[in-house]
Length: 547
Image 1: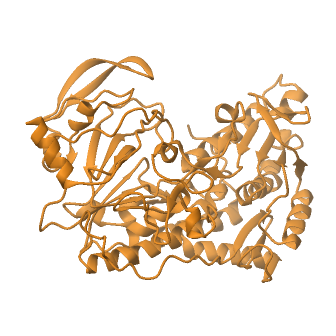
Image 2: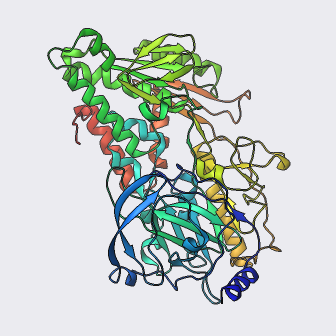
Image 3: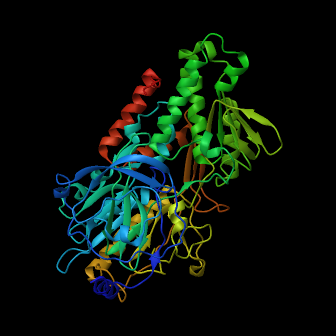
């Protein structure tokens, strides 16, 4: 019977296996299993995927062994499948027993599986025609983060919910349609031969929960899993620095900042220790680093001086950049930003970080920089999940795509956003990791999928002779960044080195706020953002430490 099932599977699909990835942390793109084994042989799928499994699950206590150590973990026994332990590489037999969604049948709508909930994924989800496709979104967070305003949440200018939009609000079919789902999970592997993705549920860090493993068959796969912060292999960065990519990152930064302010007022703290605790260091002079520095300087100038008068003279901000800040902006705007940041108290340092310690960083020239809060913002690169995929990569290590955002080495797989880049043979440069690039790619892919569906190419292996239309073309609309104290930069050039409109000052700040207010996805969040800005202007920033 096993031979018959294997033969049936091989006739059903053709292609190659993509990677083998095991999640180690509760985020989408961390933790990797070496690619030592081929893709597992598909043997049996559980029919459907519905809540009827849950009442009939059986709790068992089992000793779990894996590459993350040994612990007693309660697990559940699914009907038709053995309980899956967490930790270590999965064998063929283990993956073949995963419960999940099996391949769509004749007469059913094609199933599109989307990995991720970032800009590219959510723009695609927002526009996809759900009368033509069933949609399954798999991501380790259930919301999209409006990243341009994330820095404002760190100091209380905005509340965290103002920059987070639930995925099921962006595409309501995920919550309502019987064959569309959102799964809070990380993708741990992709098998292009069988058109299946393998997943593991995730939870909050530090909160114990039962891990479930499952599989989802797809007709079309859209990989939009994003990127992860670049650390350049510098020792101590991941252990001691804060990144600024997720709402959880902003929450941790805010807690640390407020904690340091309150601890520094404790009797007996030395002058030297006060200066260290209240020294905020930002690594990276890109838009995120500059905007966070500007928000922090505003917080110090207005709120800290009023509410923490005992330590107001100790707190200061240092921005460290190896080259020039805002290198993609016009020269005149860079000079304006440099002068303004210096004026509002941000110390600019040219240097390269050699290593990071719990209370100081060491620069390449041997100098030490003590800190109480360290925020790392040096750009992004391919995640470990993307690196694990055994497919051609673009320059820089992203998933290689063609002009229609397809992964040409496998069938029915597309990639968009920060995780994707044009292959060298396309003759196109790898696009920058910007929200507007990801959003534009998501919008283009919606139109492409609509055209494919109208030509009856939505099912697996049915789009080979489909006319795809015009390829994707990206035109840069410009860049914006706030530098604090009601000042901002607006650079409307289409490319670096070209001529175009460049603005700086209060007018630019007004344009920056107006533009981003209109780009916030829902009217609910637009209302939240406008109200937060108004209350901050009148009453100041919220400095309540919760948690």
